[in-house]
Image 1 (cartoon, rainbow, N blue to C red):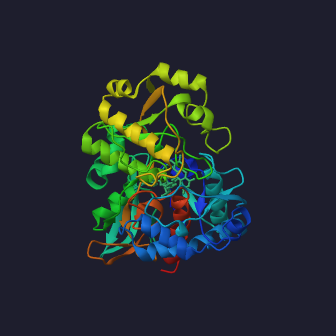
Image 2: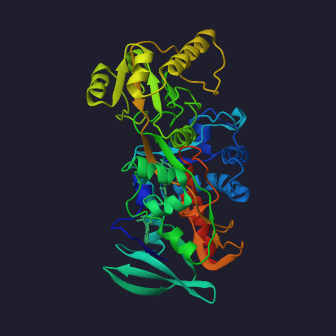
Image 3: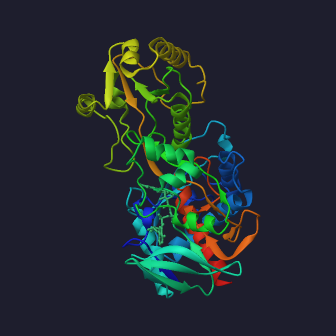
Length: 449
Ligand SMILES: Cc1cc2nc3c(=O)[nH]c(=O)nc-3n(C[C@H](O)[C@H](O)[C@H](O)COP(=O)(O)OP(=O)(O)OC[C@H]3O[C@@H](n4cnc5c(N)ncnc54)[C@H](O)[C@@H]3O)c2cc1C
């Protein structure tokens, strides 16, 4: 096996990740969480519910069933040491019975950048089996012969070479993370992030959707869409160990529109839709103490904090213009261009409901406390962890054309493949377990070719 890697290092966005991975029913889940009877069936049902009917049920079921074995394989074969399990935040329409703490993290993992531990562990194993890599080598085209992919064209230092593939070609070049034209054509939310919030995509710069482009060029089908967006400042709703603080999100009409403590990409999809629908920013509104001063919303990753945790950071944020503040809610509305009376009505309804203990109209569970003056507003600004949606694949990761027929010799894995995750990212640990599971399936299928 040979890997052609466009950049100078192995691992792409996976290096930048926390390396956390979802799986149900593992011995580690039993050891590190309260969930003793969880099953891959429940996991698949949760993912499928979050897929809103858009996903390939067979792929999702395979991923949920295969995830526990990947976790064991990573430990037993690649030397990964699992040390904890936590959960992601809820989604209002998904039954609580399907939810569980399933996010596995390994020793020294969990923080951005620690995904490189997983990359190195898997690569060391691959190398021990004879795998080779060529760096700074861009796969620029697929070579077709009688409808079969028989090799690739590579570009090195501006020179092009043709390489024959004996068993097949596996595309694993991620999604259309840094490709505005492709996003415009295929993924509205990624296009919005790239154009309205430039510079917020944290994916590897080399991930420009090349594998998807090459597949489309020879007739492959594209499925899925959506993104992995989250609040760039608070990191809210990324981790069920860190309760979200009392705040609500409004559009320019001063109205709430989403369950703010739902898992990050769920509420971020709603932010995207509102900003598109109104042509105006959305805002996070909170009150005295910056909401976070007492609540300590430091991210659980040790040493990392995302928001205004004390008077000093709060004042600095006001000074820099990151936070807008006012003594009355109407005045705050005026300052941020949000309908002042509607905003006041939204605040009154919030405070009335939390005082009376009424169920939240959007299904929110965390951070239901009164919000009082002085008031603060933060223009919601996403971080983007990548685009969802890729080439349509079979359960063996064979790429399928727009007629539903397999393109012989061509496979796709990771975020280069679609149909297994979307239309919003269901929660941390979904993508990396997908890279592991589908990567192994694709490798096995090609080897057996
Ligand atoms: C900061 C951050 C934290 C995250 N944390 C997590 C987490 O903890 N858990 C989780 O599940 N998900 C996480 N995610 C999401 C997850 O990391 C990505 O979805 C995932 O790593 C994508 O994996 P991939 O293998 O598809 O692509 P990548 O890991 O990006 O690999 C693609 C590779 O293809 C190479 N390439 C591209 N084009 C070509 C070409 N033409 N020729 C040759 N090579 C090419 C690239 O250089 C790159 O090395 C995180 C994302 C970010 C940005």
